[in-house]
Amino acid sequence: SFSEYLVSGKLFDHFKHKSVEKKINNLKGHTIICGFGRNGKQAVSKLKNYQKDYVIIEQDKEIIERLDLEGVLNVEGDSTTDDVLLRAGIKKAANLITALPSDADNLFVVLSARQLNKDCKIISRASKESSYSKLKIAGADNVIMPDKLGGEHMASLVVTPDVIEFVDRLTIEGETTANLEEIAVDDLPKKYLNKTILDLDLRRKTGCTVIGYKNPNKDYLINPEADSVLLEGTHLIVLGRPEQIKKLRDLF
Image (tube, rainbow, N blue to C red; front, side, top):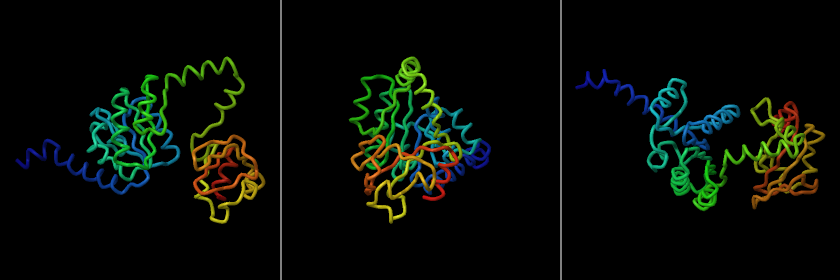
């Protein structure tokens, strides 16, 4: 019986699953990606560029085998079930991206994930307009409709071509190619808390410009005033060339 267990590869699978389980248990603040299709792959590519930890949930055995060969952390199973989400570390995850082809499945994932982790940021894909409000009610922080975005983008290239081309060149690809950076005020040195954007003096110190301000109520202010106060829980959106963004990260 033991020889059969050994030859069938079940022993190897057992140790592999134990090793993966241990690695996932050690993660904190990671991102869970449900579905490794086109959108899932794009999400992974972006997270890789920013050296963020992630775990993929996928049902397709061929994809799982490929991920295993590449050394990518993954959980095989149905992401609409609580058990699979728990194995992927939903309790300690900071974000969840559900990019399944079915809106109904995405809805189930959002409902389950929100119940298991109240603080997790949930981003869901949607195909139909009617699914948007349902996913938001279920607990999704953001709902993305890839087909709609594509059509709007193409129309914008007709209406405001130069503006769109300029925005397209503002990359947030990775550590060394970014033009945009998000700064959480809570992560800044404590001396800047309750000071103003002017007190940060980013333009002189790094060459970067503050182009956005997100207040604790999650409202965005475009091109904020220099006297805007850096309150706890606020965020700044900063624009600069890659070398300026790098200088910003090094200083702050």
